[in-house]
Length: 383
Image (cartoon, rainbow, N blue to C red; front, side):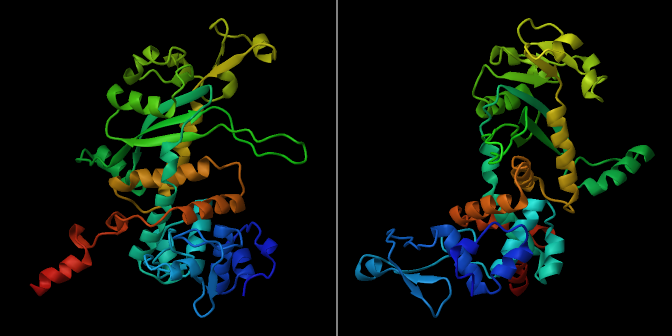
């Protein structure tokens, strides 16, 4: 049984606190029903809020209105129906454990398969469905007045970097398995609202990273216009050839010179620009709070590449077609870095309850040997 008082469904900092409050599968389904309907279940077909609880089947409900309606196909429903957990054969404890690890950035399919004694394919599919839940990160619109843009090439299998370096050193032929990505990051850091000081929540510092095929202007500029619709935004870039005509759509762009890279190591060595005059500011102007000064650097988006590379090291390797899903997983944590693990889990749980299982499930299944599923291999042997 779960807690008798619904107020005991507080924010849980880890899976141990959640399992202690809800030790059984029935208690976890009651917890899920409370989070979905706020303690008052509703029919998922007609929206009727006076439903009956089927005590023989935990998490199952019956709608009296749909039962009387002859046109209604079903009159019973589950708390898992219409969510990402629908049709699962795993326990909710396994799902919640994996969700906590996603919030911490330590979820790996191989480690989860060993921990829960399940197959690697089942573990990978669970992680893939959770990445499908957070795919909205690639559609985020940035509204800050200053953004930084940059592109990068990352390895889908970082553990092969040593092999690649040895191949280049010996003159042997190397392979190209790197993934190209284009990143946009707002300047600043988000802050939560403080009840003690009475300060409101400050949004900002969000990032968007899109996996691309090439790094020409025909690809990068439309992506920038989509996620930064305000053309008055100040865009900082490194002066790549793809940004040569960026001033036609963003007149307030700021290009970094070659000498600026030599001063990247320390923030005080970066170049500062006066927004009013457009000239380089002195140390006296920087100390003067009355003047509006901006720093000419792209260190913010460069730090995203470093953390994204560390995130890739968590996984043994992944296919290029799933690269955007892995990037979205990183963005979910990065854009909520000002929140605690309990608050991240709460947001992820709400997204899981609002996102149904996708119809194209074949995208979230690992292939067998030589790119064929086990079912196809068995059928071929039978023939």
